[in-house]
Image (cartoon, rainbow, N blue to C red; front, side, top):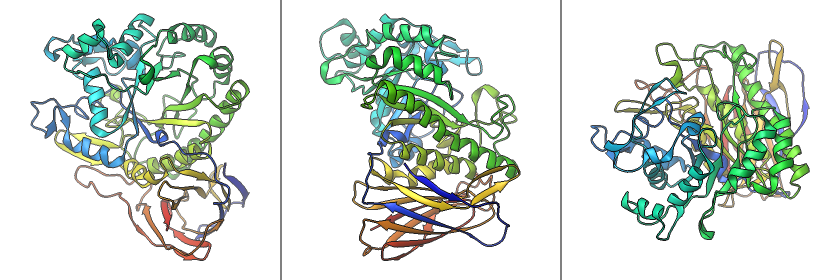
Length: 510
């Protein structure tokens, strides 16, 4: 885990700040699971319909109903895993309504998100085929709220059975001869809230009961993920791990970053925000480290071998509803601030790679901190998309501890480290370093020493920044925020990088 060795006081707004970093290439840590870069796609607003699925008859170019532009963009992002169908939607979703001829599927009402019609056009086959199409593993969330253990068991059998059971034959009748691989299955979602408003003690017993019936062939058994805590509900984690740790493969927590985090109904706007909300958002994002640390400590007590993975399977920014749009669709613009939140959060996950084995940003398309925004035939990539693309080398890389001294960036009564760092040795053998300058007003000169690595090769880099803190891409100006080439100097075992204000830089040492 990285350590912050020293933080200086407030600084004047003139000239760049200086920071020193030591990366311990001679002390490799855990593998950073590629699944930390997972996505989340819920039946919410235009997340599925219009975002991913337009149908075979759409004038928008598509492959079997899936938008070609979105599919191509997600392939380039190397998405490792997608969680579906929710979210709150999952606990009112009955899978049998989403199979068979689409014209015969029932039309329901999405009571959670906007009260709009849910045509069930995108169901089990569509999702699992989509995951295959983009090269991602599927993570299916089971209905533990309004469903039954039998319904959950039947769904898993339908997906995984390779025999002549009635459910396997039904799947074949619906067009899929061979079973799909199902690596991950979630038992419940937010059972403390929209998934049933349960108490931890009740849910622990119900989870023990329901997971019993999640069965699959020996060579296709999914990991069972237990619905876990909301943010800092450590009691929930204590109860679940004490009562059911031996019956789960992973345990999930949810956390959303907000600028006015103490006021859920007044979170602040996605664009046009003041600098005070830039720093409060980044400060709240860094709270993820405390959450993961404390939940992990409880897990360590009951699971010292770290067999149970911690899945942060919902995270991201959540702002006030965008004016002129249906509030229940959770559409928001995505800015340079969101890219910084993503960088800081992913760096936290890297530092806890021994316990955090998956994370799923909310959400993939058109919802909350989306990778992609669409409008009819138009598509735009967001700053968060570009940040995730820059961080691809960290997937399945080996974490390298980083010790650093950084000054503060301060605004009002809030202060955060002006520099955040993460490093890893990639599968390509190269060292990759992520450097985040949180200060929107001052550049940062960072001197990085690499302990335990030869300094013969060169260094390449890319930077993500913009002129304003709320800079964002639009359908008219899709390239306002995008990565650019970045030059750093390498002298022996030292690398010197001059980061612009409010920037994220990823360096690769040959």
